[in-house]
Image (cartoon, rainbow, N blue to C red; front, side):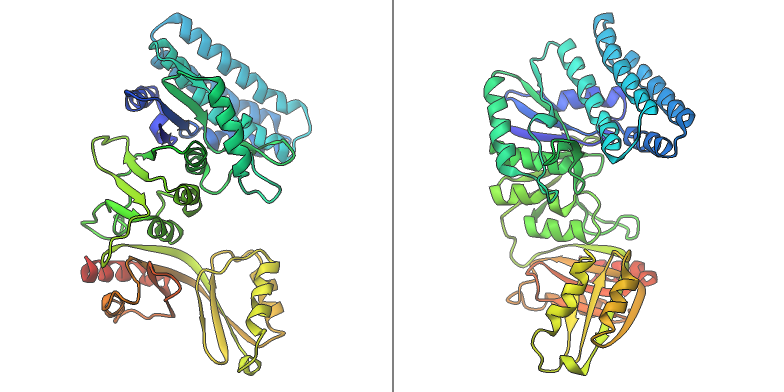
Length: 436
């Protein structure tokens, strides 16, 4: 069985929903994960904002607009009055449910209930359409099997046991359909997966049922070897190792969150990134296979801040770095890159919410300086030390660009440069010319 995930743009209109149903039907059963229709989640966030502000009129206005939009989708999607009525009855019940929040205290618990409605509506609409086409579809609620623990991490044992028990009770379906993004938390409240969203759902389901393949369908033709908005003539990368995909995802490639592929990696299930606009295109395959001697892509991540601490107390001292790292840990701030010398250490971060407190605490151990407005440019591929010469080519490409920091050797899959934001375009173009 394949797991197939479709994002909001892929189900953003009646016509696109019809196209999705053509893609998911095949000789074998498929497990399909859907996001909310494009624009819906933004509207639900807006409704929540009005409710937090106690502006019930504003919330009701957005609900009314959303209802009008969905009524039009129903008219365009279904051919028979029977299924138009089924879909409308469900949707109108949902909009009445949304309106009911104007009459009660509004907290983050209620907000998550509201945000869950987008995925629930899209899956019900597609399920009704499949039924109208005579397809045996099993609509499974993600809230029955998808759960995160007290730390906000997926409870993979629970997910596997619950989901397989549900599948055992619903044999013979052509399509198993569920919602991405939404789940329950350790308190049994409706919640969401946050990082990776629906992609994470697909990966967790694939690992739980030992799928043959996980397909992530978007309106982009896989991962590219550089940013097409900056560099002309970029090409899709047809194969990536899981670690390469994680590096690209973390350092700027928007198509796939690095967290979401971890369950697939550990279960050794290949992930394919495919394009709903060009379903015949090969896309990008991500698995555990190595490609020795190949450089795959370049990615960039802007708005990075570099924090440097100089201290003679660091010289030949053990425990110094631990104290420094504990400061970042205490403010739940992760470090992207790190470079050390005998008397100094520089770390880059992308979250500056607690920068002032971090700097104040670091000053107890040395002199602190901060460089903001920085960008990490990362070259991804076979960067193992046995692969002689590739790091030299990357460094040579950056010869005319001021480099604040270089990170190499922490991973076999990337070399990263910290530069100014304004030098990003020149760096990407230079690396593309030199490496590809």
